[in-house]
Every structure is written in C-alpha cells, then in structure tokens.
Image (cartoon, rainbow, N blue to C red; front, side, top):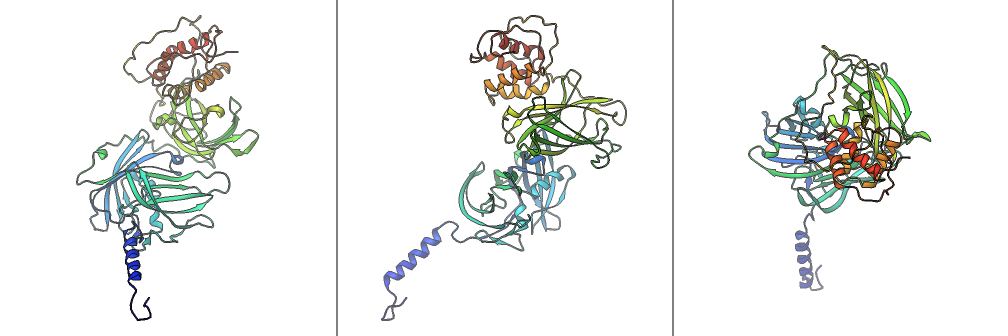
Length: 499
C-alpha cells in the first residue's frame, strides 16, 4: 500500500519480500498435480507388501514390478511383475496404460495378482489420471463408490517412514467411522502407504486394502529380487465339475468340541472328486445368537485319517499357518486332497486375532465332518501323503524317563503342530501352551500312553529340551512318540494336570 506521498514504505516491502521467500522455502507449499503412474520411466522398480480383502480376506502378499520397456505402440509400459503369496511365487509380464496405469494385458499366471495391483497400488487412478489430473492439496477428488459415497479429499501433509525410506507426503483420504488414508510422495509414481477400510453398516470395519512401499529405485537391468522362477501351478482335470452352491451343495452346522462357537458350513459339489475344486462357505457364529459372528477368526481345514492324524492342511498347502475370516465368514475354493469313498475332514477354529499374529486360543475348537467323495479323474484316487519330509536328524537331547505302558496308542491331531511351532518360537507363552495341551488331553483330543500323574506345580520351569522337541515335531523332524515323551515328562512333573 502507498503512503500519503505516493511511495511504498520500506518496511512494507521488506515484509512482502520476506513472506514470499518464506512461502517459497516451505516444502510442498504449493500443491502439485499428481496421478498414479506419473513420471514413470523405463527401469523404475517398486516393491510392496500389501493385502486386498477380495484376495484371501486381506492376507498379506508381496507384489514387485520393474518397468522393462514401452509397449510396441508407445502407449503403455511393459512390466515384469512378481507376486509372492505364501509358498506361491508367480512371475509374468503385465502391460499398463499411460493415461491410467491399469493393466491392459497380463500373462495368465499373473493375472489374478495384476488385478490385486489394479485395486490397490493404482486404485487412485479412478480419481486422477493423465487426462484428468487432480491437485494433491485439492479439497475434492470425488466420491467413493459406496452408497452415499464419502468425499475424497486432501487431508494435509505428513512425513512418513516406511521400509523404503522417509518421505514428505500428502494424504488423500476420507473419514467414515475411521480415517481412510493414502500417503502420496509427489516424486514417486505410486503411493508410499495406504490403509483403506471396507464400508460396513455396523461393527468395526475390516481393511479393504493396505500397502507399504518396501523398495523403490531404477535399474537398467532386472533387479536381483526379480530373479525368481514361478512355482508350479496346480491345475484340475477339465472333466472336474464346477462347484454349484445353488443346485449341488451340502450344508450343516455344529458346535465346536470346546463349546466355543457354532461353525456353519456349505460345500459344493455335494460329492466332490479327489483332485477337483471344492468350494466352501463358512461362518463362525456365537452360540447364544447365530446371527452374530466372531471377528478375526484364524482357522484351517484338515483332512485326517481314521485316527485323527493329519493328511492335509489347506493353510499349509498355501504356505500359511492359518486361513482368516476377518468378519466371521469366508468363501474359498480348494483342490480336494482326500480319500475315497469318504474323507474325514476337520474345520478347526485356531483362535482369534489379526492375520499373521499368534491367535488368542480362548475360542479355539473344531468340528468333524465326513464327506462322501469320488475318485479322481484319470485313474486311481489321488491320496495325500502323510510321510514327513526327510530332514537332517536334530542334535539328541536328554530323554524323559520311561512312562509306563508304551504299547498304548499315541494319537495327536497334527493341527496341534501349529501351537507347538508358535510355542517353540516364543509366539505364545508357556502357560498358553500347557493349558492348551492339558485341555486337549482331558477332552481326549490328544491320546497318549497311560502316564502317572505327578505332584509338582504348574509354575515350575519347563526344560529347554521339551520346547526344542516341540519345534522339531512341528517341522516333522521327530515322531509323535518322541514328542509325547515331553508331554509325559510334564505330566509326571505335575506341570500338566490331568483330572
């Protein structure tokens, strides 16, 4: 503003200059346009740990990709993509566009994972694209697709640290019961981090998808972490009937052996073939009101022999310790590994808790099913193998004293190995393990040779060799009988009480 003499006061000019300089020095003071895939170039690579609710109920997987070159028409990029999903590794080519980085082509073996990428890593292209760019500081990017969709907006700036490093980010998100947030670093072509929740009408919303950037960079040649081979994919015979939950299904429900919950189930086909697809729909319900379900249930489906010994585990087939039902129900398709004319199956609720953690076993329990089965196509029935993998013999440990009549049978359901593994790795405490084993012996779930009850107390220290044996048994390095020696020792020492 001029003074009365028509000149600009020096102090005023200095204030304006200082203000402009200070504003210009503020990082991100002027928000820039951004869209997924912006500034992507040949040689860029990204590694993510992520999950998506439509892929195994948000069980974490890793997706990595490297920008190999441009597509032949110059309108996109060819990515080498690797997915690490439990014990499954798949590598293939995926082509993406330049306006939006959604897949335009995927090798068949990687197609499911490129769809996960589309619905997580590149999801914001539904709001911002090369031809419809949004500003990172914009108060309105659009609305979510849910009923009465929430306004997607800038939620401000925040420094964020992930495995790939520390970044100054803008947060794009919305609030509905909880904050849904996606962290964007303007210099990167894809998000740094995200936590987006499923839209539910009641209760705590489970994650719809999460992601975290593990590594980012540029390399003219394939990065070393991409140098992997795809694991073999298990196919089914083309003669296998497709599951039909409407016209060809069996359903039922039962209370778990521990009385902790009711497990309702439906499977199709009603008489499945060994080696063919079998679809399951499960619900883990409260005993006092079956319309209410337990959240965060970790579980597994086992095939067992007539003595209760594990022949197959659906979770272990995929390289995981458990399956997961975040809101108390699940729908999954397995390849049946069983016996004919019937397969003995166990649905075991291992406990509750977030995926990837040691579960709270207070609600653990199981139900048993007998499923009528048909032979596999192409010959004799496909039988699961119960033979343990050959591994080096562990270093011998002190043996427990002989415990009475060892000619009696030892019967331990192999799903108990999960607890033994978690205990040996320190993921559950001594008390939790002892209480669980004690309960299963009392209920007859574990049957061991007759053992004299000791008069010790449950607070005394458990010898290290017993925990070592538990770990070796869980990994198949020692037999059931060798593991039982540890259980018998704890009984005679009074650590485990049998009433």
